[in-house]
Length: 283
Image 1 (tube, rainbow, N blue to C red):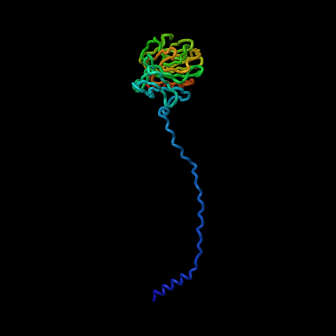
Image 2 (cartoon, rainbow, N blue to C red):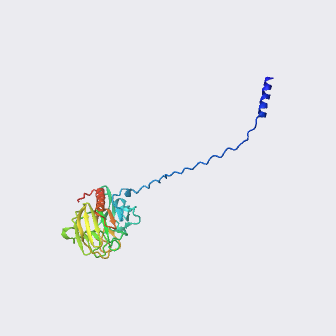
Image 3 (cartoon, rainbow, N blue to C red):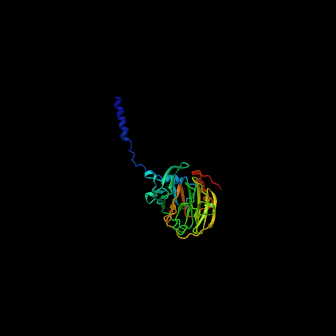
């Protein structure tokens, strides 16, 4: 009986309860989108190894040949020589007999390109003639297997027969200096080269004069030069296609600038080359 009374009481309360209207919930206030004012920078591009280690000026470099970059085919013969950071700029041997060889550990742990003194020579696609490039600087690290000034042997050149821009062994240089340069009007002795000794040379060409430094020491300073025409391409391991004058020895590195470097810049290049190849400098 008591249980029945309780059920009736609950029913009466439920029936008499006023039903509250159902209201939709208020829309939430729009949240303000926060825009970050800081943008994450893209990861830096990792520079090429050689570029990352540059301690030399890069402006004006038109040719850079490094023995360590020389890729050989059969028997160590080098057909094409370039630098991956100067695409399209190469030195090439047109025929098999003109191909020098690559020696893996030729100078201070670095590879060198060896020219046989008979038929080896490489042709570049760079023109250092006075019309195309009135101002230029040529840096080289090399050895000669001979100190004989005859027969004539040129480390590089673009000579068409008129004593154009070229340097190497020559018995016509003055002062008993067997390493000489062409100055348009003839041959100027540069320094006394010793066989099998490594050198770092810096040759500076302008429209009307020539200067040079050997292992950091000034050897010729603004001597008069009168270059006219020249071969349209620079040759490595010889003076060019007119006389050739093949080099007999090694080239470890060869750099050409299309401008004149100031003294500080020149010394930066010399220091880089000397440290790399273990060549002492004298200043």
